[in-house]
Amino acid sequence: MTALTRRAALLAAAGLAVAPDARAAVDLSRLVREAGAESGDLSWYESNPLTALDRVVSAFNRGTGARVRVRPESIAGGVGIVGRVANEAQAGGRTADVVSLGGSGIMRLQERNLLADAGWGALGFPAEFVSGPALLTAAALYCVIYNKEQVRAAEAPRNWDDLLHPRFRGRIGTWVRMAAFAELAKVWGEAHTAEYYDRFLAQQPMLFRSTAPLAQQVAAGEVAVGLGIYHTALPAIRRGAPIEIVLLDPTPISAIWTAVTSQARRPAAARLLGAWLATPEGARAYEAATERGHPLLPETETGRRLAGLTLAEWPMAEKDEYARIFEAFNARVNEASAR
Image (cartoon, rainbow, N blue to C red):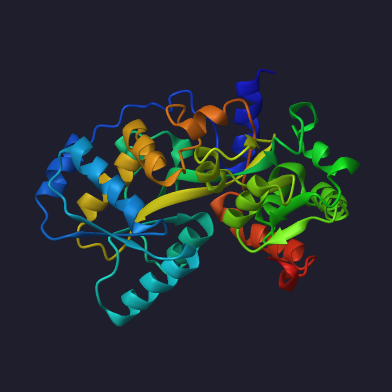
């Protein structure tokens, strides 16, 4: 079985798949015209800093030529976005026209009938890019980060079993929220993942409240190896820190989806922004600004690095099962001890 076929089969089981036509031509011209017929600002709720979102908006305006004034708002986390949209909708006031967040948040909004059917598939996107009312536009990747001054390249973790080597006992750092392991269970199964998780905890990992300080402490040499998130390690690498990133197989991911709200005042412009984010041009611009690229587009650095790897993530319809496993794994560690 070829790597592509193997990856496609496993991704299909997880709700994502590699599309040979991932570069499928999507004609945005009609959406540009429709968006031009609307008036007013386009409100976009996202969790990235405004400085990053403003860069995305500038690229969107240049790339589409649309006369759309996008007003991004940075709201911390998917829970924050869901709560904000739900409260504003209940109050009868204006809410976002378009939102970008994780699959669990998309499900919560869909359950409240707060998302519109944007017809993403009819625009020409591969089926693997679409889940209900949402369009896949990016992803965060879980990865290994190691300090090259403390760990020789020949001894660096290259697979999941390598993290269990006695040389790393007491020298591993990880996020206190065990999302990577919960996502891994979709590919490995809950029993096998739980058994591996027991062995990982026996390595006495140092717990961190956020993945950004985790990457910083690996760079500083406080811990030799970190199990963290790809984009949080990139700033340290740019500053010249002696760290290296390794993507393991399977690679747990947290997909970012974009959807139009049911109360959107500029639905055409919202569809245009969402569609553009899932094109190679839009995905590259979003990645350049936020460090999060599209996992199924080889034109992005994220897609290129993931080539040949299996992606582990629970599909949107099974996020409740993910949440159950996530909470069970989290209960095994003492969050109060996290740094």
